[in-house]
Length: 60
Image 1 (cartoon, rainbow, N blue to C red):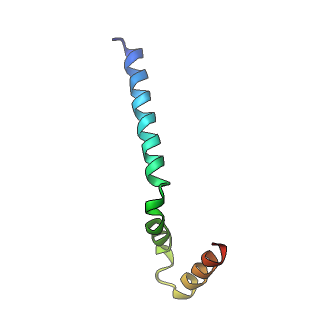
Image 2 (image 1 turned 135 degrees about the horizontal axis):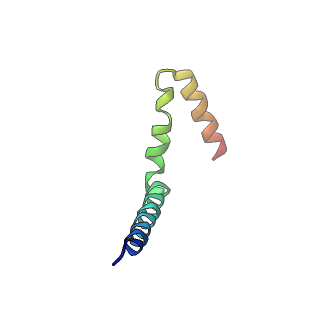
Image 3 (image 1 turned 90 degrees about the horizontal axis):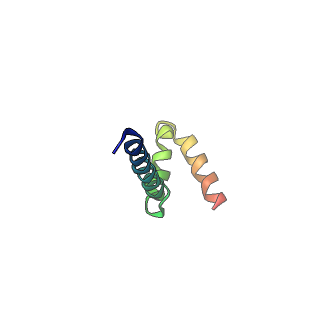
């Protein structure tokens, strides 16, 4: 095994890990949690949070 083979195998492993992260991040099971986390910057401003939540409901 030379360094080129090791680098190639490393690239394949990293690519597979990347695909796994994409599947995890965009899976439907976590959508509610991510939507809730997206509202955290507005936690201190209830008016802004209410307005953004109403806009997101109207889009669905």
